[in-house]
Image: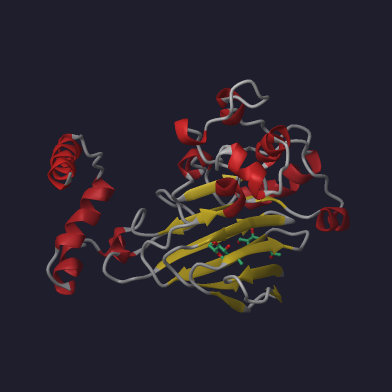
Length: 294
Ligand SMILES: *[C@@H]1O[C@H](CO)[C@@H](O)[C@H](O)[C@H]1NC(C)=O
Ligand SMILES: *[C@@H]1O[C@H](CO)[C@@H](O)[C@H](O)[C@H]1NC(C)=O
């Protein structure tokens, strides 16, 4: 028994090792820095001074975009200079009423600094702990413990910016709704006390990409309208283990199609001021998002 599984392991690891590794100049640099024996070697491996700088307004990568804003993330995945230093940073550009949907960072505590808007932020750390919520006026900062489910919404009618620092160079992110609704439909239905499979599918189909359009109360206060559809490309992909039961409304093609916002005129026109800062070339699409820190 044992030797059989050992043999299987050896075969599997041989296969894995012979699979092509996708290597890029960025991943090569990260690999080099991780192999450097000392911090001195790492500084010397970053041979040009500007390799210590990340420009959030013209980022090389790390952009995640939804209907109501975008985030830009500098981690070991996008910014090799953090390797060995245990820190990362995200800057968020919220449109009016934009919400950074509930998520957790599996490997980092985060501190969020509200630059120029009033943000509503909440967190839940674990079973048994109370819910914590705050309004963050410009200039204030809030702590989000490692692993806590948290969200942040721009409760204002102007674009707003926040800066989030992490005590890990690879904080990771798990978006709660986008992941939860990617579990097998029957498991979800049971978890929700026996909801119908089609109702569950209907709920999943509505989960918008981050940064999403926020609450009705904010939209009304700002004279904005919720767009009839938001992009939905950040869903958990469905594979055989979480496939839709056959014969129900959802199909894989349904899931991967992303309805684009259409008549969200007022919202989008206000949003334009947010994205002017950011060259369209950096508006990397949402498909690279499931693993980027938001
Ligand atoms: C603070 O910024 C980080 C980085 O984008 C984000 O993940 C987090 O959600 C923000 N805080 C809250 C409470 O949303
Ligand atoms: C906050 O800063 C961002 C980025 O510079 C800018 O787009 C936005 O208009 C500012 N918002 C306010 C309320 O000043």
